[in-house]
Image (cartoon, rainbow, N blue to C red; front, side, top):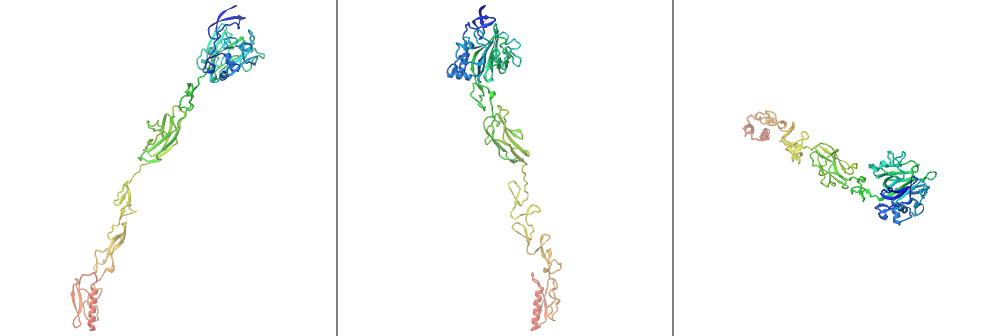
Amino acid sequence: MSGFTVGDIFGKNFLSAETIIGGRRAFGSENKQTFNASVSNISSLGTSITLADLIMYYQGQAGTTAQQDAAKAAIAGLKVKQNNSNISISTLTSGTGKNLFRYSSNDSIVLDKKNTNGASGDQAFHIKPAPGYSMKFRIKAFDQTYLSGRGDRPKNTAGKDLADASSMTNGGYANISGYNKGSNGETIEVILNGDDGDYISVDMGEGGGKNNSGIAAFKVVVKGAGTFEGKPSQPRDYMNTVAITLRSLSKNQSKGCKDSDADNSGNYDVADNTQCAYTTASVTSFNISKTSMKVGDPAAKITWNLSNGHFSEIQLLQNGTNIMPSDKKNVQNSGSAGVSVQPTTVADYKYKLKVIWDKAPSDINYSSEKTLNVQAAQSYVQCTDPNRNKDANGEGGPCKSGYYLDTASGLCTQCDDPNREKDSSGRCGSCKSGYALKDGLCQKTGCTTEGNYNYDGTAVIHDESMCYDEDSDGTGGGQTGGTGGTGGTGGTGGGELIEVLPDENGDAISSQVEPEPSKFPVVPVVGAVALIGVLLLRRG
């Protein structure tokens, strides 16, 4: 029986001749249009290519050097085998090349388990895109239940088969789509990303030494969706043929960090700033203008410099608490302005700069730590000593001229004894003439014996040498003659003085005269004169 039907091997609707022989599809008399795979971002390969050409370029069997290089750059792994032998395809018009690419479009490689319609059989295919490239394939299993219905069909570890995966969109499942079941088999479309290590392996070897080493029986690996793998004997147990069609080949758009602030910024096609690496600015200098001060002193100044502008906020920590003014938290280099600090409590204050960048929240940089010791305010004792000089703070300085510091009282003083000499510093010297030291003072000396001829009632200190009695020079009592006695008696009182003189006969006579005031003793002098006169008369 023969007829026409709408084929779906390429995912397109087209009219093809199909001959059904023994329930299996036969190839050879098909009239198919060519649906080359689209090519993107690979200039040397043009805008489209067949899978056959891509394989021959890769194997160096066809194409220009540029085309061969482009194919080798796009493919990380390629194996074409038959009866466990590698196959190089140099022509599509005869031999193995004709068998594998028997569709006129040459965009599908057809793998048979045994000689079918002239094919050699026991064929296998493995392909893996290189990093930076992606390939889209359509896989057709010529069995209506192999991909979706059989109990040992290819599944991932989550128990999902390729038909299930095509209806899922999360993660890598989005790269599996287009499941379709037709009258002669099932199809599925898979995007393989070389950046993820995806690949396809199909081995139709019959076994018995005809398996193709290094190629799995049926395995589709798509990162994020998993590994879909059939049992080692599949798929040859269920069908004679699997066709794999290249639908597209593209060079991946490069993705990476494009933020110029990042350490790894690059000229990528697509920005993926999740890959960015950032380094927060470091503190290149951090200074404080003084290390100690008193409460009330002028403020200390804190200044800093950062290595670059990679920060979003700077904090000034004082004993762990941020005190940075809002208008300074984004200043990279403070200059001389800085931040003024003037603590009012006696303590040690620890200062540190903290640099934060919201692009690198885990990379926080700190400066070294600076300590400011704050002491109690200075107090000044105002000097109240009128005889002392004062400094600028009103505190006592040296004593004024003519004064000295009394260690006992702490005051500047000078000798206040009017009867005592003073040195240049105002200290007391020796007593003045007529005075002597008693009880710490210079006091007047003199005869303090009352009734004494030379008694001094103002004297405090007795000086015996200054006392004189009335009769201390003779006891004659005014009598004359004789033995040259005393020349007469002492005074009669009342301030009178008896003067004894010889008369013309040589006898003594007396007269009373008023003594003249004198500081010298009068009586002894007068007595001496009288005595001399008596002696002279007697000699005459």
